[in-house]
Image (cartoon, rainbow, N blue to C red; front, side, top):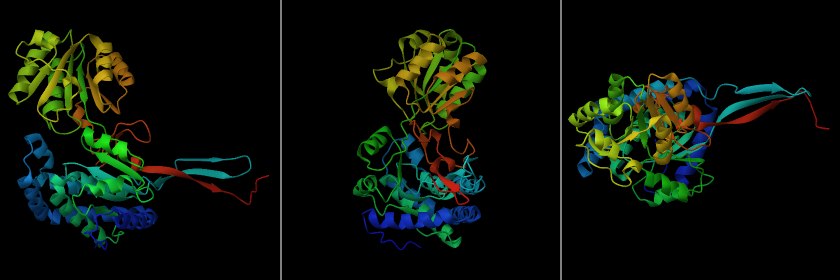
Length: 419
């Protein structure tokens, strides 16, 4: 399957193999790439037992907290979801085989803008081993090769997943080096990836703030940044309280360790006396703890006080920061001050307030009357995602196959020369 010497720590042999694979992959018809994705998904299901055993080894070696272990764990349902994700990606429209724009010039030249793969993607991620499968699927669909470097804590899982995917791709006749993983856990390989200009075209870091900050500071390759998910849900004065409770409970507690989980609850002062006590009780019964400002504690006096910095913290756990705000403008200002431009939501029955929130909050994703945990490539119809881009160049929000393309121009003439 993989002819690259996997004991070699440096990036160069993997990068050159990926570059050659990317060139071949970009020329393949969409149905060939889709067949490879389906075969890879079938291989994941065939090797589910081996993947689960590898994941057990990773878990046995981990002493992390419950939220981190949840991100690391591959249940049978999650392994099946990885496989289904590849099939779902295969079923999406081809992001390459289309014309973005076409126009004619007075001299008769016809100019077309068409999508093109970026080339070789370098993916650096932390604890969630299923990210490797999602990234592989999205890169293959968009005609890109990918080099994956997962966290050391998920190394065995990542290798088992990759072995299954490569087996499936080989069965379908796809280039053998279009999906590769780091040969070990040596941190030097990450530094090699960040400096691999000419071998890697785009680095995508997916993990905590420290990882993303380090990658942005050290990379000599363009970076598609995924900042921390300091997501807010604002319950407006005109919110339906039953709806608000359902949304907030889901946004916080469905899965506390994902980047789309709500970390801060903002409650309008007009709604707080009636809404906050039952909502706090419901969340507490599910194991949530709180960090509250003085105004929230004046409504529910059992709430613990927030410390400096709590409203700037991505908890990734069953912890919720709570503040009472004076209306829409105060909520928007709070999000601008403390948010990470990831995902922020308003719950309200007032469409004018919702429209103002959606327009004014400059996050990659803003929502109205929905849980922030819907910020997910699968839920957006992308099949999966390679991350949530929070920068302002090239892509924002969930990054699916279309977001891993750029464009180029084709010019069709009939003998024209320039005077």
